[in-house]
Image (tube, rainbow, N blue to C red; front, side, top):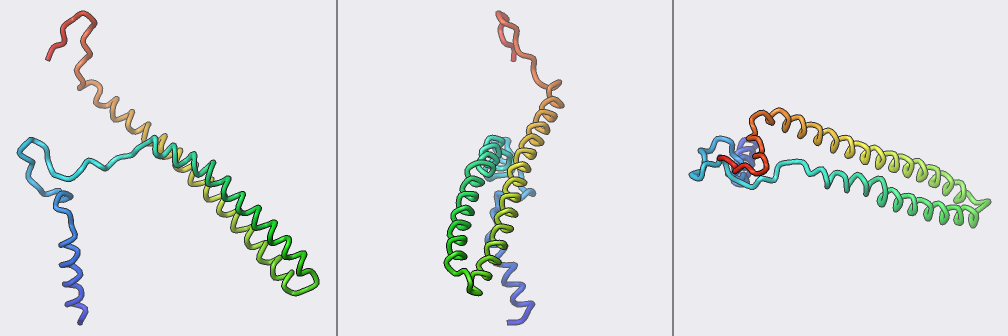
Length: 149
């Protein structure tokens, strides 16, 4: 099969997999809504908060615990093989492992921080958008006054 035939086949397969509800060039639905599909686009600040907390807490703690266990076992093996070249090799492995754990913990801390920052940015943006539309909102009825429509 040549390139042109393969490319045509791939394009046909991709077109068949597309969800027509995601097309932006649809006519409005009869009920007044536009487009189709589900309303699943958005940012869930509570999920970001949970994920940030897990990365900074549970995942970090489990990573540190696993690193300590590996360090203890490697130290024991180094002692058992002292005087052999294997001990020197294990020491090199231990140093490499410790550096990788340090890098992983740093990455977890960075990701946790970035999720928290992103959450605050989305909340700020949502608040800014709401405030921009506030003049267009109907005022709340005063207590004792019948709500108007």
